[in-house]
Image (cartoon, rainbow, N blue to C red; front, side, top):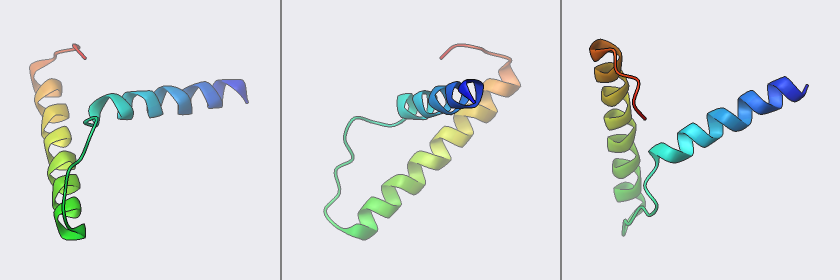
Length: 57
């Protein structure tokens, strides 16, 4: 059980590092657009990192 908890906490910590400190948006639609762009940017970052074989971050 402790092993599973550590894995969840580690994953949560890694995701938290990817997020900006603040997301400023005026409307709900703007917030959704910001989050969608963030997800795309993170995905592209992971793809680039995997292709380049990098392990920084």
